[in-house]
Structure formats: structure tokens, C-alpha cells
Length: 434
Image 1 (spheres, rainbow, N blue to C red):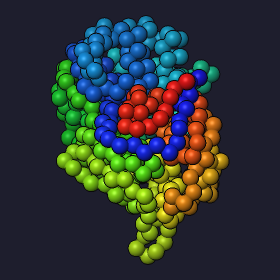
Image 2 (image 1 turned 90 degrees about the vertical axis):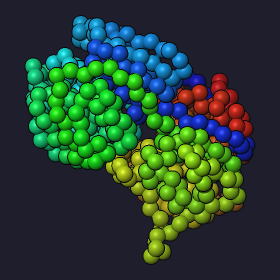
Image 3 (image 1 turned 180 degrees about the horizontal axis):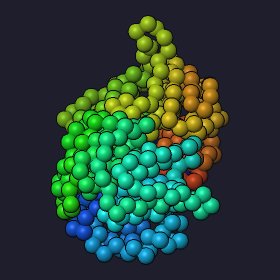
Image 4 (image 1 turned 135 degrees about the vertical axis):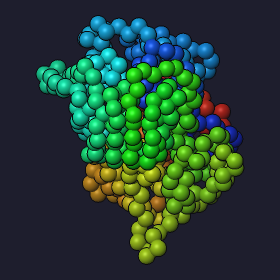
């Protein structure tokens, strides 16, 4: 088990470029199974979850080649159907959350999909009903093996239909869209997720020959086609990493430029950080954050305490609430962080309280942060990262703390952040891996 050793109190200065978006590329890689032709993907991040998914596709018989930094080509013209029934395949799926998005492509192109209950962060229940019900509405037969924790879907021919999703699940919408593009007839998906990463998936599929309209809305219409071809697709910058760097700059009183952020695709994220009192300037497609000795949380117009909560796009992504919570620790004022989607995602705050943060955990979904206004430094501690986003929040806390901290189980951070310690050391941090 690897660890980060962090010497706190270092101010950052310089420029950093966000990696390709983890949550987009997992969908995009799965979509390469929809065609026997070559699909080339650019700006692929070198992170554990992505590398594990690529390794799984290679085991499945997909030809994968790397032609440059972050540039991969996939050719799924000889998929090993026997391997898809193997214990090794199911074991790989069980340790990788992104494997759930193999269901739609495999079902659409090959008529069947067997997958084990996927792994991922321990952040509470993450049900698959939206995925499975949607695929059943397209005509798939579904079998659940409770003993082995596997799901099997099969269909000779998927047929388009109208469906109203019970939740605007991003991965659920992605799975259904990837299945519907090869279904017979028209599919209409209402209450579809419309995050930029889902938009990117739809745009790529259209470049491959799909017929998807309503992109960027919650009402998608898909005219099924007989086959898809190859294409080249570039992955967006990771909005979660952009937000992480904004919070990091504020907590460490640093002057930082975040390059090439695709600002138009950040949605409400910049304004949410501005509500915490963080100043920044958009310069073209970059974000410049000046060094701030203090930042003050806004109140609502009626004077009530600021509440920051997650919501389906265009609301605030839940993946950034951990970062916003830790950033509020050194603000002036108070804020209620309301994590609606996952009931275990706030349980890392006990580690922040041990460091000296003033946080009241109201229940599994809500925490009140009473800011120090930079009057008291957090104290260094030895901690363990429970999941990707809590891990980056703990790292930000440690970078701002007095003394040397240790974060264990950083494999969780590696799942979502590429070569993070080296990139941060290049702009002034003091972080070593042990």
C-alpha cells in the first residue's frame, strides 16, 4: 500500500494543465465495442481506472495500440466471446466500476452481456436499476444470479421505445444510449443525463454513424442504425481536477493558472467556488487564481447560511463536494454542504476534525463547515484515503496544514488523478510517494 508524505504550508506558483476527463473516457472506451472499425481516442488520462479498463478490453480480444501520449486506437473486430463468460472476466468487472458500461455495447452488438456486480468507491449504495430497466425496455431479457452476484442480459434484436428514466443517471443514460444506437426503430429517453461527458459520448457516436438528437438536453431521440464505423475523438479536460486545483490554490494561498479548462463545459463549478469567496479570472480558456490571504463565504440574499448541494447537470457535480467542503475550512463564514446522492461520502470529515477543522456532521448527507478565516492552521496527521474524491480533499488539507502529514491507501487517489505528486511538485508542493 503506497502513501503520500506531504510537507504542509508550501505555496504553489505556476501553471498546471488538467488531465483528460476520467468520467468521460470510461464511457468512450466502452463505446469502442460498438464497431469492428478503428476508434482513436485522444487525451486519455494515465490513471488506474482507465488503465484497468483498457487492460480488460485487451483480454476481451480488442486490439489496442498507443501512438502517443494519451492517444490510443481500439479495434474490436475479434472479440473473444468465450472470455466474456469466464471467471477472470467477471473478477475484473467486480473490481472496476466503469465495467458496468460494457453492458449496453455488448448487448447491442453481440446480443448478450454477462457482468458481475461492479466495484468502485465505498461511498454508499450505487444501484443499477436505471441501467437494467432501460435495457429491458429495449427488449433485453434479464437474469439475476444472487449467489454469484452477476447480471445477464440477452436479446436477438433490441427495439426502440419511449422511456422515462427514474433518475438522471449518467452511466445509466450512457449504457442505454449505447444500446439504443443499434436498436431497431426510434428510442426516446426522457429525464436523460445531460452532463458534458454524456454529450461527448453522443457526439462521438454520431461521428461513428449514429443518429442522436437532443444532445445537451434531458430528452434524447435516437434513430437506430444497422452498424457504426470508426472515428477519432478527443476527451475533454477533467472538470473535477479543475475544481480540485481551484480549491487547492485557495487553501494554500497560491497564485495558479489552470490551462485549457474548456470553460464552457464547467457549468456552475466556477460560480460555486466564487460563492466560497474565491477570486479568479477567465483568460481565454484558462483560469487564473491570484493569491488570496482571505476569502469569505457568501450568504443568501435573505441573510441565511449558504448551502452548497449536488444536483444532476446543470447542477453541481457530487464529485466536487468533498473538495468544496475542505476548501471552506479556511474561509470566513459558514456553509452547509449537502451531499444528496451518496450516504457515505461525508464520513471522511472525522479526519479533518482531527486536524482541527470546525465541522458539524449533521447526518450522512449534511455537514456544516465553520471557517477558520486563516486564523488557525490545520495540524498534520496520518490518514487513509477512503475514496478518490475524499483522497484529494485530504491531500488539499494536508498541503495547507502545519507539519508533515501522511496519507495511506493513495491507490484510491491514483484511480482518478494522473501523476499527481509530480505535477504538484513542479509548481511548488512538497509531496513524496513511499
